[in-house]
Length: 140
Ligand SMILES: [Zn+2]
Image 1: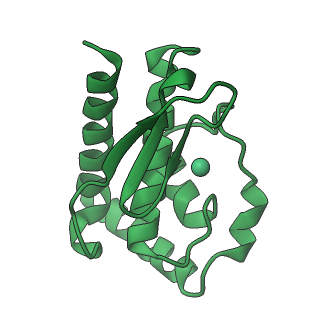
Image 2: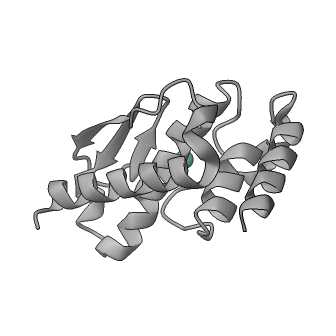
């Protein structure tokens, strides 16, 4: 499978995974974010916003697909977090919960982020996270 098709498939996978685990009913729109590719050596691995995820093909070429899969997951979590709570900070509590707890990933070294920004979480976020954890618990 070529690289672009593979990234598109993983992007689909992670978006559906998040919808299943967290619940698409919480989102304004369940539509998956569109995908854009770019190619810039030495740049970031990708960028995720509310309706669009951008993946750096030059970066994919430097690491294994297994490792890049976490980048795809990372960007999908950005899109999902922004849909859930537009005011949530990029690598704040909500994003971290999605990436680390829902997707069971580890912090990865391919993206620099500062967990300290979690303290700037939007008002009401703690409440939402508590509720989400409770819901997750009920389903198990
Ligand atoms: Zn990020």
